[in-house]
Image (cartoon, rainbow, N blue to C red; front, side, top):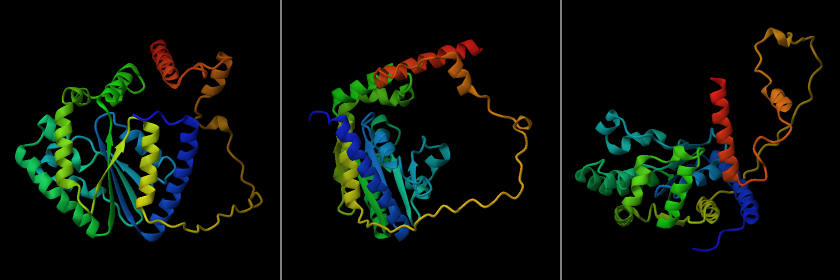
Length: 297
């Protein structure tokens, strides 16, 4: 594993790349392009945190994140790809998929949530489905986030010990440690059948999340043939003279209590020590929240 990317270098380059993503979004909107980016990988591989950095400055009306829940009984009765089709982009839209139809080739296959017939049908149909999308003009990018077994286990333990991130762990996540080789075989088979010229798999080494995010965003930008769109300059008009409007007295409306003022009266210092590490601050914040919740009841 390469050494961790320096934080200052990472943060400065990330902001530049995010500015380019905003430019790319403007081009997508202006040209009516349609973009789908699939983020797949093992549990705790860093897909979600990468999506967060990609979408951070994008317009949510243009770029949306799709993370579907477990399929309902109705979903299970439909053609497998049917539940994903409504989430595909219209003209001028970008869709970032936090997991996708490849659930069937990964967790469903390994955990026995689909039949062998359904699994093999998926491996046959997925390339056909994706060729149809690309032939219709959709730009489809597929990223697989790789993480070592030691790093995955370290992240699991961090999440289990962190009350702010414990929600990220599910029984399926923790079971993935015991099924490491099964997931490896499933991924290899998936690549054999679905790494097609029209929609290649791009693998991201994500043991160092900073490097992985930078590499993914830079590659994504290189694969979208965007150009700088000259945007209309926004002019803030002068405020017109008052027409005699008077705001009703504030005590006649229901105001949100001034919690901040109360906080300032009660505390001279930060409640969470700003000098501590991010993980330590999160744990302190969670402990304070629980303590105050108990006192309020």
